Length: 553
Ligand code: GLU
Image 1 (cartoon, protein in one colour):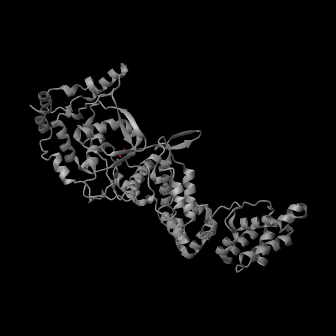
Image 2 (image 1 turned 60 degrees about the vertical axis):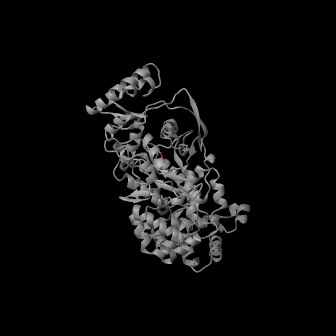
Image 3 (image 1 turned 30 degrees about the vertical axis):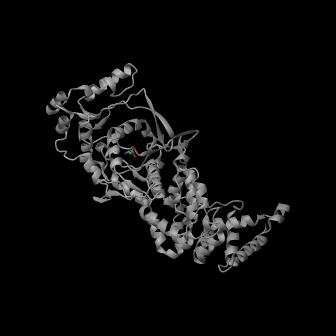
């Protein structure tokens, strides 16, 4: 009995060989230096910020080099699979216009190197496993869960390294006849890789982010095919896929570094050239005085859904990630404001190799800037899109009088120094509700009166101003001159210098008057430019508000 007999017994229906697949998935026709990257998530029903950050790196690395970026769904761990999880991945990428060049979605394969779902590649994996068995580098293992637990306890008690290796790998020495006999008897088995490594020996390997790594050789006979569904494990599947799909660069989280020796040994056993590895640092955040990993369990911002629900412009999220992907991105972006983010030349060496610090305040700042640069039409369309999904009432209000809504959004916009108070679309309604009667009428009004807080004085100032001074055709200068006149009339200093010299001669100053008018109209002591606000509101709305205020108790 030979290894070939064993391989045929295990995979009687596999009649293709590795060559067949090498012929089928020929080297890609790309220019020298073009990078082939892939985003290879497991469909868990959750799109993690960390995964998205890797997808951006994949995308930029491919675009930088006229290469390509594909999406591969790693669904061999069927227990974890969640319905619709793949839709979530594809929709998230599409939302940010990170469109893979090759992927499979809704039963449609786009690309020549598919299938792109690992669960559909079983025959390919079996072919490759069959080969390893034939050359004596893989074998069936019949150890039960209990056997393995016992082994673990034995090793732990003696403080030995745990795992299935060396003399503990007892199925590796079973004679082929015995192996075949057990299989024929119907005993359950997994397939393990037969390692030739020595844990006491170190080897060097380059990681594009971390530099040269010195790691122990792998000596574990790790599982490459599970018993239940005969699907391969991640370790095995990605090696075969990255080989056949001609991946040049594997971008993945640094938690995989510890398994790298396994992967490299597999590549070597097949005689394949391993891709280059880009192990990305963990995304971390500040938590009080410490810095910790952004966690799915503790941090809502770990999910990509968070950014969509809050209504961050997509470029804000991308840019916030780009700034942590490469420390010189921000500088490049300010020097090249009109270039697309993927024109930035990503350099893995410029990645922090310890932890990538993701900061929501920073994201807010980036987002404020981006929103401030939008034209009124852009912000209107973006806000409306967001409202369609998350705020139906505001959506109706915004659509009710489109021109008016756009004018409201245009306050302190399309200018050299635009307003920067909106960090995301879900922020906007809370800041401009007073511009819409539909919201104003039903809103609880907490007038933020300041120095002048006597209601009789307030009513007097407001009614005098709007009845005798305010004219909506006035330009800004005239408008302000009139406010000064009102200040003089009511005993407030219209000139700050005079006020500072003799404060006791006055009841207050021009800013107190302006604040009363601002609060009367908006309820807030701080607001964007009052002249613009009044202009956009128009006399009818203003009068209604003023009358209510004056008539109120
Ligand atoms: N499927 C692996 C995961 O979701 C991806 C690792 C890789 O990109 O190779 O963690």
